[in-house]
Length: 220
Image (cartoon, rainbow, N blue to C red; front, side, top):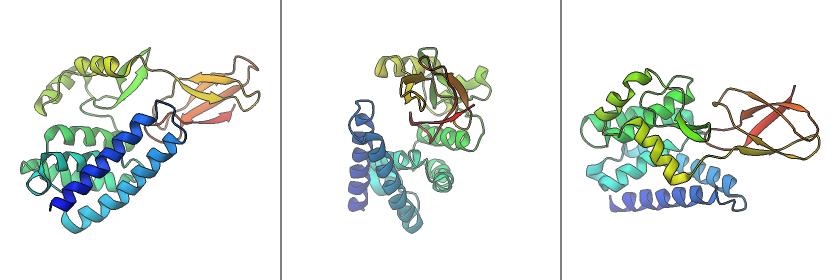
């Protein structure tokens, strides 16, 4: 199915190009990324419904990895992510997909459902660096990571810091005085409180969707 592989790679490239534009501040970059994610999710649902999981024997190593990427970023369709996780587990069991890809999607699905992640693949800014979000049994995480071919957690987090630089807080505009406020976003589903330095109004802040820097604010 060369046409399926080609389409997977095209959608993978569009996904990555959109994400690169977000930190650069390109106009409508976040909205465009969300649109691409939604379109890819609709398309991927059709593919897995018709063909099952596109494994390496069908679409090659790069095509199988691209299929994982589309599932990984289908945060706005959690039912699809869970279904893809089941299919990916089956694919890994017969060497049709990479265990490390399964680790990433496992953590993504667990966090979205309110559980702790297992492999520490999902990061959050903390103290000017990156840290693993809501991690189960951190003392044994490196053993679990090694079992799926991932480097030790500290190496992974340090590499992210080298690649992306120190994380910056999200920016929001104070609804009262229009001053800009820096906000370190909490875990998805949680809230934090911020105070505007200009007018001293206090707001509750929570992330609006996974993996974005768009805060939703309500006044206390």
